[in-house]
Image (cartoon, rainbow, N blue to C red; front, side, top):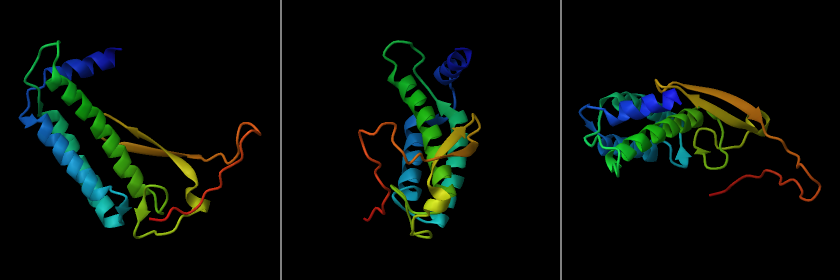
Length: 157
């Protein structure tokens, strides 16, 4: 409750010098350039650094419209805040995963590593953009006998 309202008020009254659209575009370009399906360690590391720099730009965002009705300026600023958290956790999680799997074709780690990486990544991003990663094993059994287990297999592009 209180945290959500404080975030809302802070965003609504933001008087920085950076346009929301400009910061969003920089974030989008960083994600497209450094976290696309085809990745390598260097581009991911650069992407993490760029995302940290962009994160600091959230403190300098400008919201011109202070109204509470039909305020697309405010909505876009709140959306950017959410997108930045998702982008940051995606980039850091991708950099940590040393294999190719699913939507990550990692040039430096072209093979799947089921022994080490058959697990879910759980990520937490705090207000400073710091990401904490945890992992949870993938359960390879179904809850009923009505469906069979779908065995993992290599995805080819």
